[in-house]
Image (tube, rainbow, N blue to C red; front, side, top):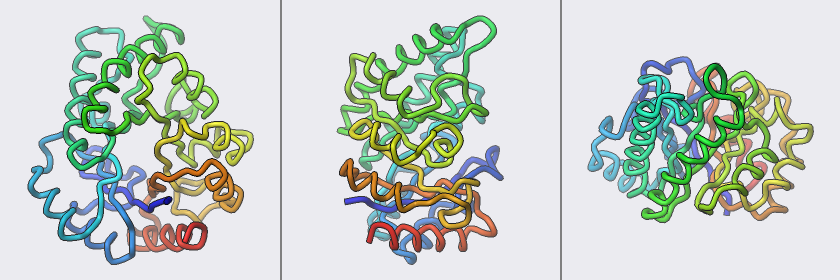
Length: 271
């Protein structure tokens, strides 16, 4: 069954970014619960930002799950990436991702690698960067498997990475890995920029897709841009997708409206 989720950011350095909630975990859980969401995706500054006991209580009291945890603070706060030409910095990047796997794993929440994938240029070319990224994912995915969750890798649009930008490129990259515990994040905003046809790309990704960011063409909540969601919903039914659709959207005109518009669209399309 496809489930709904919504993002909360606890990273002040990222304020203004595409996360619906910004004012603490308790507020996010309470508002998401009241609107009928199934889960929260947490973008935290690090694994120690939220005590496990606090998150456990929020999950228990709200009845919500943790859909996934972001690792982007490793880039935003510490300038780390998995394709850095400096081996010591790559090691630090891996350690940060590993710590976030440990943060989300007990809740059944996979860690997402988006901005921490980095870029190629300068000392390393495209193929070398992909080799370094593959090396990191091969090291990290088995650790994620100890919690029975995948590692989630996100293709980004051309303005945010120069590595892997489409679902087809992502599938080809996953095929080269020996680990089978990496899944793709299909972000509808990035796909709106890079894919010729979003629904067809989802069908091509099929079983490789493990998480979806449910957002409109302008990174606002679903229904506040020009995306036609009907073909996308049909494609997700065709591939029997049974993961989360998570609102990673700007809180425009405000968090309340963005959350309400997203769940309205989700219920119309999938409930």
